[in-house]
Amino acid sequence: MKSPEFQQSLEKYADVIVKVGLNLREGQRLIVNAGITDYPLVRAITQSAYQAGARVVTVFYNDDEIGHIRLKMSSREALKDVPTWLLQAYLDHAKNGDAFLRISSENPDLLADVDPEAIAIQRKAMGRKFKKVAEYTMRDAINWCVISYPAEAWAKKVFPGVSAKQAQEKLWEAIFQTCRVDQPDPVAAWQAHILDLKKRSAYLNAKRYSALHYQAPGTDLTVGLPRGHQWLAAQSHAENGINFTANLPTEEVFTMPHRDKVNGVVSSSRPLIVYGKTVEDFTLTFEKGRVVNITAKKNEDTLRKLIETDEGGSRIGEVALVPVSSPISQRGHLFFNTLFDENAASHIALGRAYRSTMKGGAKMTEEQFNKRGGNYSLIHSDFMVGSDKMDIDGILADGTREAIMRKGEWAFEA
Ligand code: ZN
Ligand code: ZN
Image 1: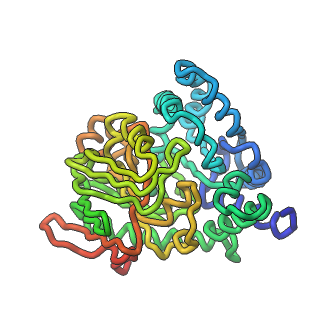
Image 2: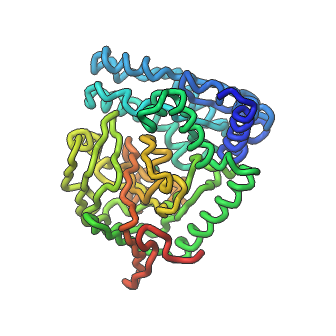
Image 3: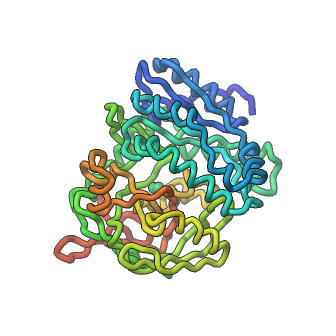
């Protein structure tokens, strides 16, 4: 693991994160959120960030197990306590136009033995407290990015049956491949990939479809798109003037649905992890935008709890298109981490919409955004619906239908 080749890949990965993901500017401060085992990558990122001219890099190391202990031992009342000083640190950075990085490395099974109700209470309290900070990222006021590190427990879940060391090596390889770190010039490879995705989003924006129609076994869903919706991909333009890539890897082209105009039934094509539990083979039936029926082969109650978080939790806030030829889909295994799994198939998110997916959305009040069809919720939970059996049509204002995807692949040239 500690070979010179590995160290070189680690540094290349750090450079992709700093240059493509964050596109960190000289003089910016950076907050990094990481797991305690992620430090080799955090150090490489810190090196790369200061090289790019970072003013201060502040790292918050989280120990998954500490959070687990608290959830098991605290009273429901105490779980609602979110320290204000922590909020202040983030708000101070956000208001100053600084950057945020989150390293996702959590053990997918960590919370399996915790009461979902306790998790829901804590998440809700956290969501309320950090609402203002989430607003900064949801409307792209600043440059932010989420990436991953193959921590041991996560790696073992993805690659069972081999030693922990081998599992970690295999997950590193998967991360390096899907994040294009294995390419001769990873930054250039990303620029080409971003351009390709941007062509797709430009094509869809020019069409101004009024709705999408999804068809697959167990799925017949019509999703209305609001006036002024914007398809986005790979790169976002932040209010602080910086073009950044919020997720590495990323393969999706996405926009927002109209919160009241979703009708029909949709079936999941991959499991969804909610509060540490795996919800399998589920269907959601929508009427006028609201979920009116839920079925699941496994952990239906957990899914129900998620949807019942608040009013907006029973509606959707994102529709994203990903072809089955995406490198993550082609790997053919689950990652048990949304960052990867959402890039393996077309997906839909329960909960809040990104302000940036509506023209002028960032400047609207919550009420205006809502009126235009934007959904608000404390949750944003992506679930996979796409497969090689899915067809998606775009419906124009006059009712004309055009093929967007056939058998899970793009059906248009961009
Ligand atoms: Zn998405
Ligand atoms: Zn999403």
